[in-house]
Structures are given as C-alpha cells and as structure tokens.
Amino acid sequence: MVAFAARSMFAQTQRRAFSASAASQYKVVVLGAAGGIGQPLSLLLKLNTKVTDLALYDLRGAPGVAADCSHIPTASTVSGYLPADDGLSKALTGADVVVIPAGIPRKPGMTRDDLFNTNASIVRDLAKAIADYSPKAITAIISNPVNSTVPIVAEVFKSKGTYDPKRLFGVTTLDVLRSARFISEIKGTDPKDEPVSVVGGHSGVTIVPLISQSNHPDISGETLDALTHRIQFGGDEVVKAKDGAGSATLSMAQAAARFTNSLLTSFSGTPVTEPTYVDSPLFKSEGIEFFSSKVTLGPNGAEEIHPLGPLSPYEEKLVEEAKETLKKNIAKGVDFVKQNP
Ligand code: LMR
Image (cartoon, rainbow, N blue to C red):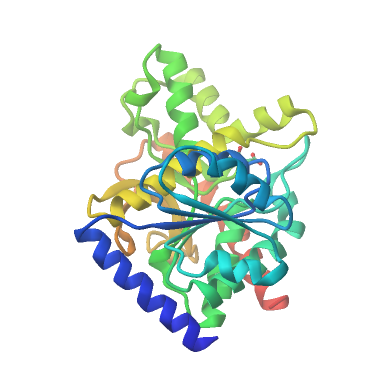
C-alpha cells in the first residue's frame, strides 16, 4: 500500500508539473456522486472541459450516474464505482481533486450540527481512503457540518501522516453565491457583478458576509440586518421549501462546481482568489484553527490566506459571534476523531 501510494503521489506531481506547461490532464473524483448534490455536481463537472477524467463513487447508483453523464459530448472519460471490487481505491487513485458531498441532508427544524452524528463517521472513513489512495489530491468538503467535517478530515490526515493544510478546503462558495444573488435582488443589479467576501464558517451565525467591502457599503439599518440574516440562514429557506425532502442540492452543486473550477484554473497557472474554509493562521492565537477568508489558490492548493481587511463595527461584532461558535464546532470534530479513530 505504501509503495502504491508513493507511486501515485509521484504520478500526480508529475502530471501537475506537466499540466502547467502543456495540455491539462485532471482527474476529479466525487465521493457521494449518486446523492442529491452528487448528481448535479457530476453533471456540471462533466460539462467542465478542464476535467479530463471524472470518477464517481457512491455506496449505490454511481455506475448509473456515470453511464448517464458519459453520453454528454465532452471529451472527459467518466467511470462509476461502488464499494465492491475495491471501487473506492480505484476511484481515488491518481486523483487531482476529490470533492465530498457524501452524507445525509437536513430536514426542517434541524441545524447543520444535527447532522454531525451521521456525517462525521462517513467523512472520517472517506478521509482514510483519500490518505491511503490519493494522499496528494486536493480535498474539498461539502458534507455538513462543514465547520466540523473539515477538522475531522484534517485529524485523519494527521494520523495517517499525509496532512498538508494547503490541500484541504471546506466549500463555502454557496454563501458567496447567495450573497451576490440576494444583494442583486435588493439593488436590481446583475449578480455576476456583485462580488462579496464571506468569512468565518458555513453555518448560521458563523457565516459573516462583509457587505462593507461589497459594491454596496451603503446598505445599512434594517436592510443590512435582513440581508445578513438571509445570507446566514439561506440554507434554511431551501430546507423549509423542500418540506422534508432535504436541503440545497442544485445551488450547492453549482457552488462546488465553481470552486472545483477555481482549483483547476489555478493548477494551470492562473491564480484564483475566493473565500474558503481552511486551516488558517488568522485566529490561531485564539484557539481557532480553521476559518474562512479569501484564499489565493495555486497549483499546490492554498497559496495565500488573506486577512479579513477593514471591518465595520457591525461586522466586527458578527466575527466575534462567529468565532465563539466556530471554536466549539472545530473542537467537536477534533474530539470525534480522537474518540473514534
Ligand atoms: C446550504 O447552505 O444550503 C447547505 O449547507 C445545506 C444546508 O443544510 O443548509
């Protein structure tokens, strides 16, 4: 296994080095590909011409999703894997990017944290497989609660000796997309022209949109309160509307596809900067190991983690609140792996 992992690590490094100078060859793996997020995400990745090899894994259904996607006329190969016949190792071997939407979604009345008991062990076990079969891949976590599942993956990688903080990301892109969309609804603008930095984490009060740094620092008072609340609890709108049938899948797939595209773009030598939840120096001195802020992505993952920039007093208060909850969410993930290695 060790020799196998080392060989695949060498192959990945070689391929990325080659990719930076010639035609790009990128293998992207989706773990949880037959689920509510996994299916539209697989479709969007099949449409992305930067992806040359798409590997879809799930406990059931992944070969069907792969066969379906494979009829879409883009050049990438698509393969589907199940746990049988070492499917997980086959899916992961040679991966450049592994995206994880696996796990159960929320039902009305649940917080993301209520998913912890089920999703923590799912993510832990997938992280072990990544450490064994694609230790150099970039890992992007969607499975909730992201504030805790990212620390879980980090702990597993540390225990396996494969942890590289630059290669692990929590996908918070949906908060950025929601911010752009909700601001555009207020201002009557095109959401594509509304960049918003969202910092902190990906759950309720840990989601902090920095409206003072957006194109509309004038938004204030009740409008700012309502906008901030809508961004922080946007996921609940979807959970409520789906009425027991789960949480955001389509918008989350779009968010994850966009983040994956940013990674692939940065592999090819064009750095991309966007908010994501990473092992961050920003508040480590306060015991907060992970934090979302703008990160510049490069061929090796997180190249530069940016500070939050100037905050309004309103945002300073939100960041303080976010830090309190984040600290607990992170500790919960770390403790889980310690107690359930
Ligand atoms: C979201 O932001 O919509 C997702 O994290 C799913 C959820 O549970 O809200």
